[in-house]
Amino acid sequence: MPIAPMAAVYLFLSRFLGGPFITLITFYQHGLVDPDDPHEVHGHTIDFVDAEHGNLGFDYHVEHHLKPARHWSHYYEEYLRAAGKDGGHKAIVMQKEQFGPLALMAALWRKDYAAIARHAHLHDVPRDNAEELARIVGERARPIGAAERTGISARIDAIVSRVMAVALPKSFAV
Image (cartoon, rainbow, N blue to C red):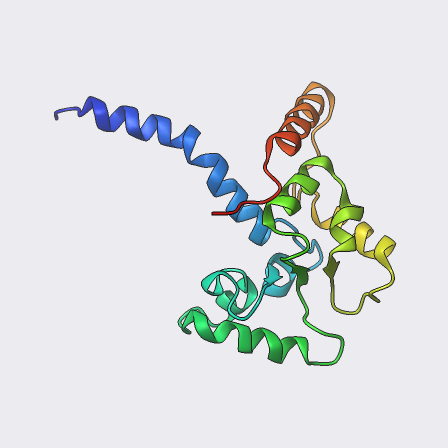
């Protein structure tokens, strides 16, 4: 069987070049998981409220999971319907104009849950109770089903996290 060296190099490098971007996308949409109900879409998905359709529907990620075959232009309507119910939308909702996905990732890397809580809302948590929401965000940012790392591994994680939080741009404009 012949080996294509350029394809092998591409596949090898793509794990290092593409991985961080895939991780960013995954965590900004699914980075805060409710340990009490990790399989329920509202407990593991974040919505970023944006003007009208929100990034071609990409930011209304809960609605995407609930009705994946629906055209993206209808996700905003679905979001408004859920937000209008008693207590509001059941997922963590971020105001994208105030605190976008990159700022969320930087705050997660810094473990600055209070910053996230200042710009988020969660069903049944009063809007003026940022301390409770910060506690919930911290709880949802922890590993599920595995022990937290300790020792040298935890220190390396902390250093890399601080570097990433500083290096990550806080906004992206085209």
